[in-house]
Amino acid sequence: PPSSGPESVPCDAAAAVDASVSVVPPRASSDVRPGRNDLITLLRSPIPSGGKRLLHLFSGLTNRPGSLGWVARTLGYECADIDILNHPDHDVLHHDLEVEIVDSILSGRVTAVMLGTPCNTFSVARMHDDGGPEQLRSLRYPHGIPGISVFGRKAVEVSDRLVAFSIRVIIACKTSAVGWVLENPPGRGIGSEFYQAVFAQHVSLFELRTVR
Image (cartoon, rainbow, N blue to C red):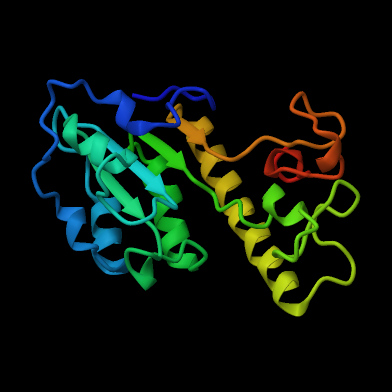
């Protein structure tokens, strides 16, 4: 299982599966993409005796071959894939669901947590002068560059709320000695070990005050 640090899960989850392991895992209950009530029922239930439960937040579509959830189930873990792509009721900004997620961690009903917090507002793909999507953040204005579009401002606000949720989850994990991993690209701006001059004003999730 992952330890409480950002390097503990490989980027290519499929690499974690030995070639001798069957590539067709048994159909899991999460494959039916449960709504909020079913998800809350799962979060309130104890971990099966001898088992391990992984929460995969912002998982993408459940059980895609090679995905983390697919690998986890292949290796015998119970994995809850939580993402609005699986069901609109998986919105972690809904207060009731957030409370249940945090409580399940604090109450010992989770073995480990993987967070794939959306990085679209932080992406360097927004920093190419090629007519692509507008740049929304910078080192000087990490919570939104003045003059961005109404749509861009809304995207930053939602992203900031998802980051704040992610930090609350991580604090719960650290409080409960639950392993966690936060997956996001590193900064490329001034002061970063991955500095690139063309992205000198790039700011990553890890450089936000709420994260530090």
